[in-house]
Length: 128
Image (cartoon, rainbow, N blue to C red; front, side, top):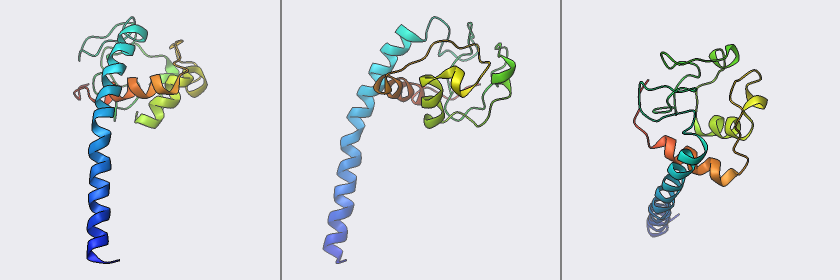
């Protein structure tokens, strides 16, 4: 590979990354709306404020069942691995299928909606 073709490849990759940013921002904005519609009855994004479910601030990278003061089913308290976008996607698609015994009954069957909600959650500050 010549230097000019390597430079072109790097430039192309950089442009693709930059082009993806507005889409991610749009996904997060849509995710915030969806969160308010679908999730906010049971969850908040305010650290330290739990509702029926735990707050979701900093959920990405967090160990399931680890928010202090939140009420968890035994199944969720012992669930592993840590929440990452792929695990959250699976869980939101079918909570009781992924964590049998969870008390979460609401699923998000639409993959685009799940992706937007996860993009929103990823942008929240880390807190426990």
